[in-house]
Structure formats: C-alpha cells, structure tokens
Picture 1 (spheres, one colour):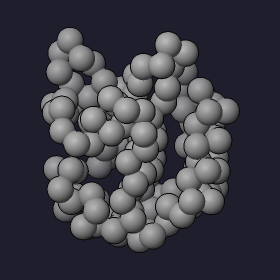
Picture 2: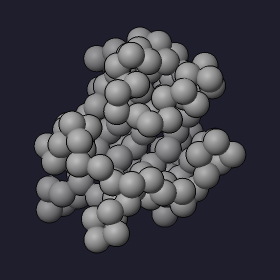
Picture 3: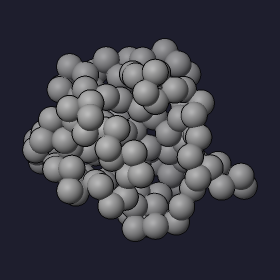
Length: 134
C-alpha cells in the first residue's frame, strides 16, 4: 500500500502540492489516523487525532465531497493545527475523499499549497489522480 501512497504523493507534488497526507478514519475508536505523510516530522505517519463530527466531517466523510479552502481563513475554523500549517508557508488546503466501491469514505487525501492553489482545473487533475491510484 505504501508504494501506491508514494506514487500518489509524487504525482500530486508534480501538480504543486507542498504537503501531502493520507488519513483514514477509525469510527469504532473515534479517531482519524495518518497513513502517509510527506512531512513526517510535522505530521508523523500513524499519528492520530480525535474524530469530530463537524461540518468538515459531514462534507468529506458523510457526503463524500471535497473540502477546499484557498486561504488560511477558509481552513482556520476546521483545522486545529492551522497555526502550524501557516507557519510552514501553506495557505490553501484541499481534502479529497477516497470513495470505496460500496460508496463509503474510508479516508481522505489531504493537500496543502500556497494561497489560491486549488483552482477548478487543478482540482479536476487532483481528483483524477486520486481515482487512478485508488
């Protein structure tokens, strides 16, 4: 599985992603788990955070729709680590749900870049990469 994650990371980096993670969710334990990270010091693989059923969760996991924020103000209210993200010079975020064959969302591909990076054309390209590597 890590070869697939690394290949997807490399493809997303080629499109301009500066920080790449893959997160799965563990409903029985109420946690999100990081399965892959391009920045293991700041975002270690297998790190966890509490699973909160908020607006982000409803959008990405419940409705299987991407979360897009092209400015820090757009993600500050839903990312507890927004200060770390901006301290790394990152100002936009995209969380793309990975949709399983049964329609559930077992996790997300999380992309961070400079402000206003996630244009409709780039999002289409990123979504195609996620689908291809699924």
